[in-house]
Length: 259
Ligand SMILES: [Zn+2]
Image (cartoon, rainbow, N blue to C red; front, top):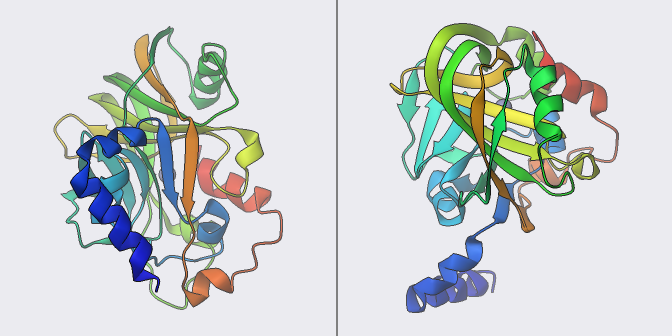
């Protein structure tokens, strides 16, 4: 029975490729940040599935095996040793957010001395703070501090404990692209409120989850989501997770740890 809707969707997409255009400005995410925080590190969604929903985004890989970056239709993994790898379609992801990136706005941003200053400055430029905004910044970055996380094995520990063993890398005058999202506070629990950015260098050899950075003036490309699709895992780890509590303190440790 459960197969039927998927088959219908597949049929419709093949019959009418223009239906894909409806994906424009639709944010897709698999699982929710609070589940990741609690150690739900395996999902059944694959890189192939992400390709169906977007060409741009961020997330992680099953077993928490590094940081995920989607850019121009390719999905990359930054492992905890700092190496970057292209991800095949059959690789599974426990948490990811993607969009078919079609920027509606391009804003000039003056330099920013750190991540907090950047967040404040870009907030002041956005035409709305009340939806998820996909953010792409290409440039040469005077200073970036990024991290990646080490692959885990069951039984999984909460993310706040795992990041104590994260690898941190700093880059100076590195050309590349920042890929990520600004999520409104009202989506707390589903995703990371505020800016969540990953970095990929132009040579494809460096990257990670951005902890802090310094910026020269840049142009920021913005795609405002008009709808959000959340795919909830059906496995026992997700269904059994204690998701009815406030994970704010864990989130702060995970997103800003080492800043
Ligand atoms: Zn991240």
